[in-house]
Length: 637
Image 1 (tube, rainbow, N blue to C red):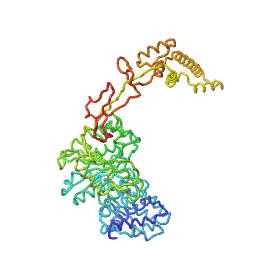
Image 2: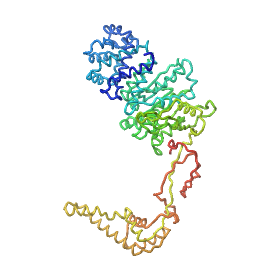
Image 3: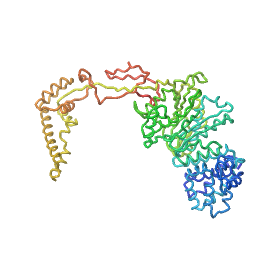
Image 4: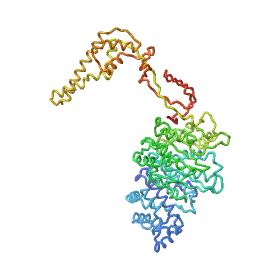
């Protein structure tokens, strides 16, 4: 096994031992923790005996770790080689071996929930065989460097994630590579500075793919650069994988926090130069509402969520605010990218939490651009997705002299993809290296073309205007219109046939209550009134069409004057005898045109559009012909 692929393929073949006992998508629950343990076993090999001897006199973890030469140690008498000397007691000895690790490693293995897998492997008599196969692969640093081991582990994660039922906690590598290209756009010179230290964060980090790709990108440009990563993950197994990956690469595993980012900020007061996130789409945060509401009340904009609180059915914009809270407020500032579905773009009416958050982001000039991605890129969903690029230090000028400050760039990358030969879950498309370079080029050029539009921040501000149209009616007393009166709610409620039938049945069974008797009597009175009204109107059928409500109102009141009707009933009759007619006179109310509520509508009017283009009095809305833009980002007031 002299190369990367040989090592990966060898470990992959070990997974075949699990066939029949595990479903293929569950192989990773065994192979990943075993790969981690074997790597640590090889790392500690040279100092193993010294640690065991030291433990006899001093059982202090810090001293044992120092003796081991790493930030962890194992004081157990066992290693993989010795475990194979006693096949009859493989499970007990293997569990003892794991318990011998220092606390930081035990925590990782516990989060893998590996104890259940050890029992299952032993019950099926293959635990010994799995240990034996892993023992045959040399993962010692002299054979496999930290960087190469990191690549091996990442490749295993990728393969197992692709075979998982929904690809949970995994973002396709090509999408991450595009995000990395975007956040490092325009700062390549900074990356090449000798001795530079870069901080990278992902606060919904899953298995750590974004942190790994960002680190690799920086290291490729500047091998001597120091990259410090920070992450947080709620899923325990994904957390274990990420923390293992960090340890394997010789980075600080303590920088990967466990828990809910909303209620347990694992990196409080920590700022990062770069950040990437792919938070879960549409995550419900009802259980966190009290905590977040309290934080907003106590800290406002000095906390993380001062811009606004979205609806509890989707926490996407909470993740956005949490990420923005990690921006560095210095001369260089921070660059960040986050993946969203369409909800953060579309959801929320004027004054809603979502609208206020978008307004805050745009007014503070934090949104640099949005890239629309192809559909069917992700393993667990085929919906449209977008990359938001944010920075608190927009370039005054790009390399070609264009000004980003005060502007937002929209790129349509939805057509840059290639079909996959074989679908993986919902993933049917992939972005090739060529696609990534082309999207990054379009974004970096900051020049309008068929795929790119550039707008001033103000163009995303909108006023929400209620459009009222005047009420115009004609009137006639005819057989057909008299029948229409029954469709008016107030009139029809005078006599409810179904209700009467129900009350009569109760009366027959002698279960009717006193209040219901009164109600029944009222129903019959209502029926008599209906009959009187209809009879009176039929006596006055004329067929005359009147297009002025005041004129008809006087005529109708004179016809019905002896019935002494209430105002609601009279209005129901008036409307029943009417029809909408654009040629009729306006219906006036207190010398003003009355609005037709059935035609009421709202329009979002760009703040950049002159108010005089809207004639509210005549309710005519004149739309200007504009280039198509991403209206869902619109601020509404």
